[in-house]
Image 1: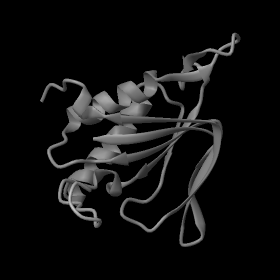
Image 2: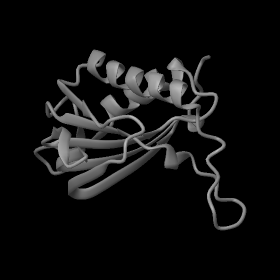
Image 3: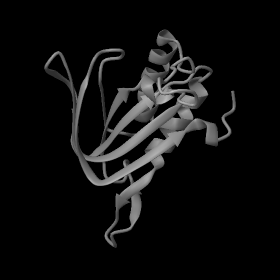
Image 4: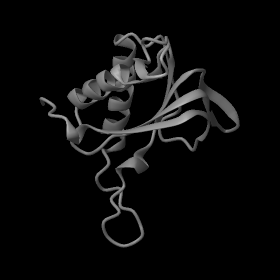
Length: 153
C-alpha cells in the first residue's frame, strides 16, 4: 500500500462538477492499493498516518499529529501510485490490486483512521474521474509505502 500525504489548509474533490468530499486543516491522502495488500497493511498505514507528526508546535517544530490538532483527512483512491515505470515510458498498472479488493481496503483504511480518533474523514468516489483541489500548507508532502514496515499477515 502506498500513500502520498500532503499537509493542507484545505482540500476538496469533485465528481461531475459536484463536491463529494472536502476538508479544512489536515491532510489530503492519495492512497494506492497494491496486489497482495491486506487489512493488516491498511491498519498499519492508518496507524502511521494518524501518528505522523508534521504539524508545528509552539516552538515551530514538527511535533504534532493530525490527532493533536484535531485535523481532518480527505482520502482519494489513486491506483496510479502503483505504477511500474521500470521499462519504457508507458506505466504498467499490473501491480495494483483488483478493483474490488482495492475498494475494500480503501474503505477499511478510512474506517481505521476513524477508529484511531480522526474526527472527520472525507473521501472521493472510488474509480471515478475526480478533480482534486488543494491548498498546500508548507508545502509538506510525505511518501509512505508499507513495504518499508514489517506487516504481520
